[in-house]
Image (cartoon, rainbow, N blue to C red; front, side):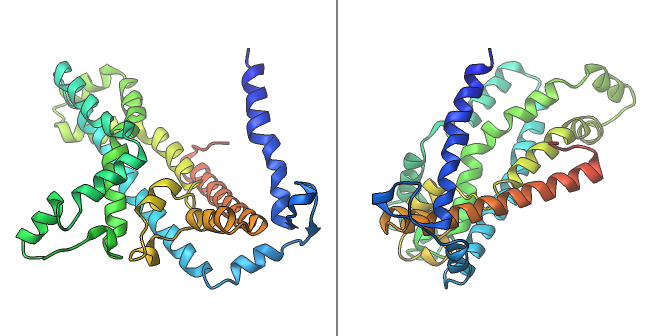
Length: 285
């Protein structure tokens, strides 16, 4: 029964990996994927020594790590709060409300940001003007780009990401809550001594997986939010690969950058998995 799933994964995930060789060749349209002069590590060296390397790594790491720092704990906190709601109808209403933003497409989300943050017509723009900040275009500000990106990302995905934590909390033995209540534990003490320990294995696993994409900043949202004014902080590896590979037709160079990105992500994943196994005895393998 699992044979079709294995076949799909093999065909669509492993067979295309043959294209990795483009990162080591001088791609030639006339010779196909197997042709072109072998260049070895030339394109990797070109990227590392390029003037864009430091800025790309800084922007990508900053956005990714900031998203993890602020975005990773948010679903945990939300799940703990929702778990304390005892009125079932109110709990279902709250869950539905916080899940809905996840289903907004990236294009619509960025469109909403453009409308809301417009210095001339947006609600936030009018509010900042009323507070005496003047006409401030947050999407064109290098200082505001990352906070806007992170806050909107947390708002959009926090509710959906809390589902797995709510599932983990639903598996907690009710007798533990009864015992805590009998011992006179407050609500915060119950959360600290019952709920959080129950979430630790799930938190560790999801944290390891999130570190595996530390350089995999989402392309669509960053690209749609980019403009010439915020480009110094919004140009990341994903958008640079698109511009080099698709726009400029430098396929070998873009393949090398993409492979470099993947190797670094795997290194982070492996390192965090080793640390988690050593200190918490919880790991992916």
